[in-house]
Amino acid sequence: QFSMWGNRFSGAVPQGIFRDTRKLERMMLYGNDWDVFPDGTFDGLTNLEIMSWADTKLVDNSFSDDVFDDLHSLQWFDIIQMADRGRGLKTAKARWFQGGMGKNLLRLAMWGNPDLDKIEDGVFDNLDSIEMVYFHDTKLTRIDDLSQLENKLYLEIITVGNTNPPKKNKNSNPPKNNKNKN
Image (cartoon, rainbow, N blue to C red; front, side):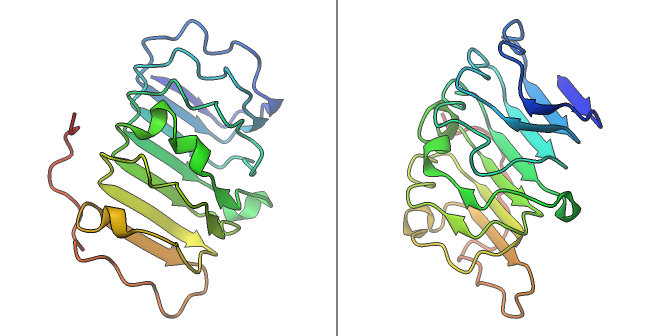
């Protein structure tokens, strides 16, 4: 496990920082101010199963398009923003999930992202194993197409200041079996 809590590293992630961590299975990046993750940052981390971010300064251009491509084993992807950080992601980008990362992903959660107001078309296209999707405390007002995921996952969307929360899909209970479907 690689865990960094409460460090205030800022700017771009140092080139090659994860180069010798090929067997890494869990990565927790909490309370860091890194805001640029260029191509190659996570290259070779094919065993990584959990990636969790909290209390960060991530913004829409923090991740290059191909930065997650080697994460073939990733099952859990969380981005938990803290409202008091002053900036955050506005868009969940389809490209993040079109490489290796989307193949085995079971859980996708973006919590406390008060600026998140868009999910790009195609985000869910390659999430064949997905079981749980959480979007909490966002500005989302719509998601264009969830039909391909109907009856396949537990979906929960809670928006900031929304007095009429979106309806949950027919499968309103979280899955009991959290095994990978390979």
